[in-house]
Every structure is written in C-alpha cells, then in structure tokens.
Image 1 (cartoon, rainbow, N blue to C red):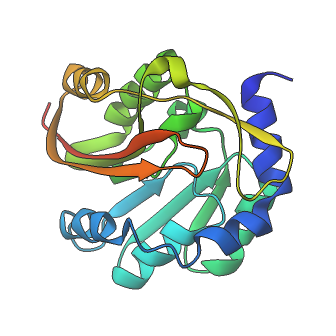
Image 2: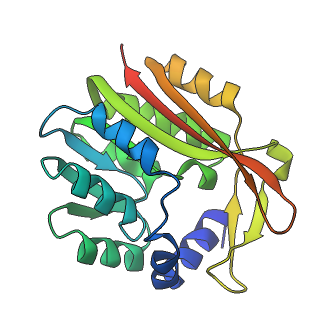
Length: 212
C-alpha cells in the first residue's frame, strides 16, 4: 500500500479510539469560534476529513443554523460522525477528489487535513477549494508546521503499532498557494507543540476569504 492507503487504514481501524481522544479536545475551539463568526446565517458549509465528527459537532452546537455537509475517506470514521451529528449530511469522499462535487459552498473547513497531503496535493486541494467556494466565502485550513525533512511515517497515540504518514508544511508555502488562488488571509494562528519524543512543531491555522 502507498502512504495514503496506509494512513487511511490506520484511521479506519482506530476510529473509536480516535473519537475518545479528540471528543473533549478544547485547544482549537477559539479558532472554530472565529470561523463561525465569519459565516452568514444559514451558510452552506463543507467539511473535509471530518473524522469521527468532533469538529462537526462543535460547529453545529455553536451554529445550528448551518447547512452542513461533511466528508471523510475512512468508512468507520464517517459512521461515527453520522452517529454524533444526525443533522448533518455526510459523504464518503477523499479530499483529493472534492472537485467532483460540482456545487458551491459559503465556507469550507479542513481541520488537520493538510498533514496527510504532500505539497502537490495541497496545491490541488486549495485550487479545488477556490472553485467550490462562493465569492467572499471563507476557507479554514489547519496543519503542522516544521521542516519538510521531518515528514514521514509516525506512530500515533491512539493506533498502537499502526502508522500514519505526516507531511509538515511551511507558512510561506501555504500563503503563496492561497494568494495564487484568490484568497486573502484573515487570520493566522500558531500554537507551539512539544511531543513526548522530543519533536517540536507548530500547529498552524489559516482562515482566508476568497476575494477573486
């Protein structure tokens, strides 16, 4: 299997463990609140890589007026997301294939989708998002910032001996991708992270508006 298939298999296998790990995670809530404040009433929102639906749940509790569609590549993750969010619509879909949707949204959110995509796939994803977002629509993307050389397979805290492939990205690269696709960065949030194994990186959250 290639790195994408291995990562997908790990998350599919560990879906319930992952839900238990993230359901009460609060460190990104302030950024989700900021995202919600940028959305008009009854906005059409699309979430990529929704996992077990923890972000979906938080956003819909904050903004029950949203028309919400979410997607994930792992069937077991998607089943949990549907269970936890009966008022949302869900699609089994690879984020690398969102161009097949052929519809428009007022906002798109991808909470930590980019760490699983290489640079070529990131460029394509942001381009696809630009085509799916209405003028003045909002894009939320979060990732992990470190040197590209640090990218590779890693063990996770929820999957035992299974691994996922993590791609680390850089601010300048993502700013350029966003600008090239008609996005203006509204907010950039960075949070330093220190892993028990000594690895240091930053969580990096972009919120951008489509102006072209």
